[in-house]
Amino acid sequence: MTALLQPLFAAAGPVIPTYAKASNCIIQNKQFCAKWFFDNFSSRFEPRLIEHLQLTAIAIGVGAVIAFTAAIIAYKQDWFETPFSLLSAFLYTIPSLAFFELMVPITGINRFSAEIALTSYTLLILFRNALTGLRGVPQSAIEAAEAMGLTSRQRLLRVELPLALPAIMAGVRIATVTTISLTTVAAYIGAGGLGAPIFDAIQTGFKTEFVGAGVLAILLALVVDILLVIVQRLITPWSRRRVRVA
Amino acid sequence: MGHRLMADSASVSRAGEGQTAADPAEIAFNDVVKRYPGRERAAVEKLSFTVPPGEICVLIGPSGCGKTTALKMVNRLITITEGDITIDGKSVRGLELTHLRRGIGYVFQQIGLFPHMTIESNIGAVPRLLGWSKPRIRQRAGELLELVGLDPSSDLKRYPGEFSGGQQQRIGVARAMAADPPIMLMDEPFGAIDPIARDRLQNDFLRLHRQVRKTVIFVTHDIDEAIKMGDRIAIMRDGHLIQMAPADEVLAKPVNEFVASFVGADRGLKRLRVRTLEDIELEPAPSDGGKAPVITRENSLHNALSLMLAEGTTQLAVTDGDGTVVGGVTLETITHLIAPADEAART
Image (tube, rainbow over all chains, first blue to last red; front, side):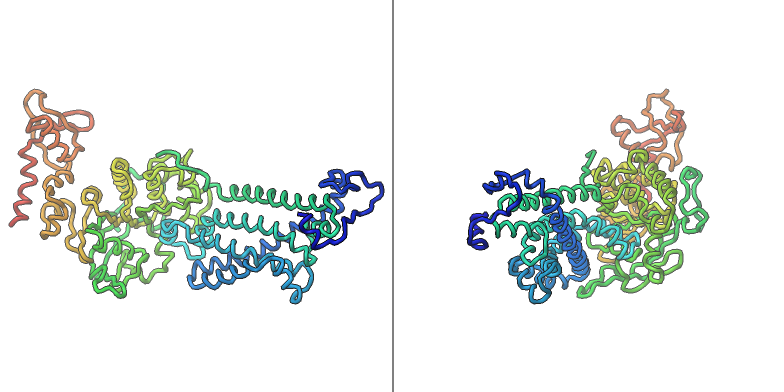
């Protein structure tokens, strides 16, 4: 990977930061120097990791509000599905690097530009899953709710949305993992996050920094995904129970 | 309303204590019409009948006869085109929709338990809407679960997916009765349940109905179920009411060929199911020194005849619950009970 990108970003040979008493591992620019990584974790990686989480959380949060609102509207008003699907699918197809670059003249080189792009990418997945979930609510449960005299708002909050939760959560998981990975690219327009050390390392050719940040991004995605699975199990305890007796 | 609770319901606390809402209500259809746009024939045409408080009225007929449509117009799941349905004289069209529906228990073939809610929450759905306290809901859910033959101590915290179809429909019945509505609408409630479980559910529901009187409209396409469940049977065809009468009368005097063929060629035999040995005047016990086969009084005439055929005899000794012989029944009695009405129907 570094070998591929080096010609693009760093025409000159690797520029290793000159630290006092650099270890052999650093001087030889080995693939990964664990000691250096852990020594520098709290100063160089931890703040980036936190930024990365923030960027992702804001994108998913804002994206969820927009996408779920849209899904509820589309669930109630069929005509709304097509325009919103087209819009979110269109946004999804824009290459990420191009999207970030496109936002720069409009909103500048900053986190805000990055968040707009990242949020846009979440919409299609979150919307599709939420709408599929809502439409998959058993007709019998809806009829029962109606016959009990639940208002349409009560029906949505107490029956339809809870029953759509497994599908909604599946969408949140996919969107979150995708966004964590995309957020690394957002550093290209100065949004920070784990992408920043990666871009740095591409410039300098410093492999430990590159591998360290990359692995952190992967671990972050895995850990967040596991956490989301746990959350899903906690909020949908009913979905795992099976028929006890025939 | 004349119908009061029967004594044996003392074990069931009344959810609507002190409220008249708990008394069964009278339901009246007045020239009710349902027409769907773009369809020539009305789904329901000038339907008029009255269900007295506390009775089970069965709507039956071939598919497309309008029975489910008629049922669903009571709680306005389907809107009435013309005419009116009244509950204790009050038009359902004039009542606020949510208020109307919370006062009507609804049980249907697909059951429709909320899979994401525990049994307690399912049963407590309407009470919660009505603002009951949590302990009161829990107590009520427990009572009802016991009433429908499930175990409150282990089942309240389970989810619907853990129960069989028959058990789920028991819970469905309990849920429909949660707020003690004066009316229950049942749309082929036991239609998707295997025959053995269905038979038990029917018996249990009848027992339950004796305890907690409700006015029930019950839709089915199964004539045997109709005969078993209905105080009255309303037979419909093409949106019209063809005949409405107690089961025995429908079987004895079908008003036309359609009804006669709908109830079946064996309607004479079916009549024997309607009456038990408790309903007829017994003859003196057979004086053959105890050789005659013995049958208990709560058995239907059908069972009595069946026993005669099985034993190759024409008389039985009838006993009460304790096994004391209280009288006898002969083949002749049974045929006499059935024959005169049939003669009348032919003329």
